[in-house]
Length: 463
Ligand code: ATP
Ligand code: MG
Ligand code: MG
Ligand code: MG
Picture 1 (cartoon, rainbow, N blue to C red):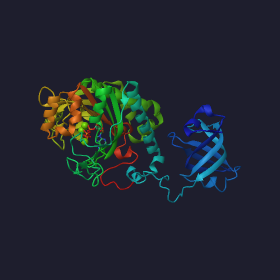
Picture 2 (picture 1 turned 90 degrees about the horizontal axis):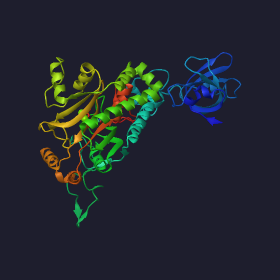
Picture 3 (picture 1 turned 135 degrees about the horizontal axis):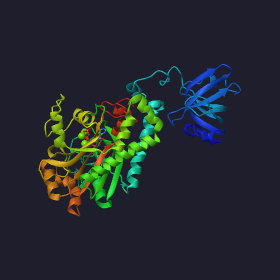
Picture 4 (picture 1 turned 135 degrees about the vertical axis):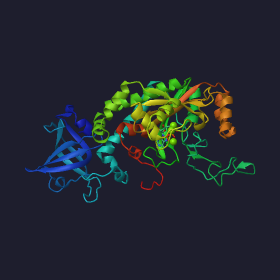
């Protein structure tokens, strides 16, 4: 007997086959004449399969007629053509085996609808709902697309450390993993003393793998990292998490224009893949969560991204006549309200902003000749704002050293990073894409906490 997923059994090619299906009951409806319809879901797709069980089955009266939402069962039976709406097949059960019951009084996912906020309290069960099943199937497809896109272009997947000593962004948003706050490791009799602290030096969870990624780019050429990232920032927004997943390509011999081209092709590839391979899930989001998202994605795939300098964007915002909470002036970092205005009201599509003021950007970004700006870029999309942040990196040793001094950084702490410029330096670029941000955009889910399995935010306690 072949085990099949609901997705497989819904295909017309299985008609006439004996199959074994396993999953969770969504609903049960009893019909006069001694049979019941069971809607079964196993997470392989949004849709359920209809199982028909009749009173010839030995456990019909004492088990099948008591099945409630959430019960787990195995069904063995024949796939038949179905006359029902929205389904081409159904299963006539020859056997229904009950794995586990689900108390109808206490099981949270009854017919009653819950808010997404409430469902976060049941992070362990919400994945069985339609919305979260779709979110995590799309998340899976996007993760796979990320690897496919880079692998097909000859990028190597590299792993950068989770525990690190360098604050790449210089924003002071690192989670500390050791208690010691000294520059030099304490020593006893000339030997490092680990008795008070595991590493005998300050250590943190990574905010970005970029600096270490540059090591690989300047030796292997084209690389990308894809892993968990941590930021101890005020993540009480709908777009920030304390723990999120970031994709960070780093490309040797690439300037900012080449970087923008990769970013654009990358996003288009992800959007195309989810539309092709998650059609049912995307139809669900299009209908229930973000009306029009499919047209939006299709439009993005078909048109070129706009490019606009930070300086021009500031002028657009200033001349807009729009009342912003934070008035715009040259030199400030743009807030989400500004990014949203640009993409939603002004350009009405994604835009890549570039050449930001150097005073608001980290030390590693390449300085322009004007002395005021750096070769930074942000990809902005409607609703979510920034989904990609990147830059061309400063490859000139002397400029990099003076930038570090300007920002009060100790060059000795970055000796290995400076070595990459000291020996065979090359122009190079890269960017970071937040997996959850892109998922928010694709699914239309309003809160970033609803596109990651276990959201970590300030005051997190639930799960
Ligand atoms: P923002 O301006 O939204 O705070 P950022 O400029 O601080 O983002 P970068 O350092 O440029 O972020 O990181 C690259 C990408 O990582 C961002 O474009 C975004 O997609 C994602 N990202 C950054 N911080 C977070 C966060 N706290 N939670 C989820 N994703 C994030
Ligand atoms: Mg930030
Ligand atoms: Mg930003
Ligand atoms: Mg950024």
